[in-house]
Image (tube, rainbow, N blue to C red; front, top):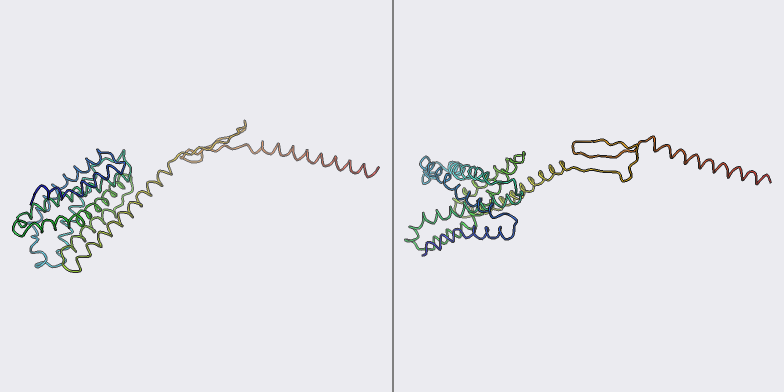
Length: 293
C-alpha cells in the first residue's frame, strides 16, 4: 500500500475541479489559488474546536447514553454550526470586487472541495493503522465513499455560504442560504450514522443541497441584475430640435426628454387649417359662379 498514492487519491477531486475551472471558466488563477489556500487554512480552527468539543461530549457515549436527540444536537454543533460558520468566515477573505457572482461561487465551491479533500486525508491517516490490520480495502472504500458523498456535501454547502457572503456584500443578506448550509450538513452527517435504509437519506440531502444552491444562486443573481438595471442612465434626445424646446430631468436616473412648446405646435396647425378653408371657399364660390353662368 503506497501512502503517497492514497494521499493523492484523497485530493484527486480537488485537482480535477481546479484544472476544470481553470480551463473552462474565466476565473483567474490567483482567485483559484487563494480559495484553495483558504480552504486548507480553515481546517485548522475547525479541527481544533471539534477536538475541544469532543472532550465535552464523547462521541462513543452519545447514541447509547443520550439518545437520538442528543446525537442530532452534537452533529449540529460539531459539523453544522462550527464548520459552516468557519467556512463563511474564510470565504469572506476571498476578494470579490473584480470578479462576477458566478466566478465567486466557483471559488467558494473550490474552497469547500479543498477543505473536504484535506479532511479525507486526515481520515485516511487516522485509519491507516486499521488498514494495516484489516487490509487496504477499508481505506479504498473510505476514500471513494467520501469522494461521492462528503466531498460533494462540503462543496455544495460552501457554495451556499459563498452565496450568503456575496449577498451580504451587496446589501441584501440571504440568511436562508447560510441556514440551509448548516441544516443540510447536519442532516447529511446525522443520517450517515445509521445503517440500513435510513442511510439513504444522506443521498437525499445531497440532491436537496444541489437544488438549494441553484435556487439561491438565481435569487441572488436576480437581485443584483435588477439593482443594476435601476442605476442605468438612459438619455433620450429628439432628432430635430427647435428653438422653443425645453429640457427637464424626470428622475435621478438622468432621463432627459426633449419637449416642444405646445404654443408653437398649434400655430402651424391653425395656418394650415385656414388655408384649407380658404381654398375650400374659393372652390365653392367658383362653383356657384359657374352654376349662375
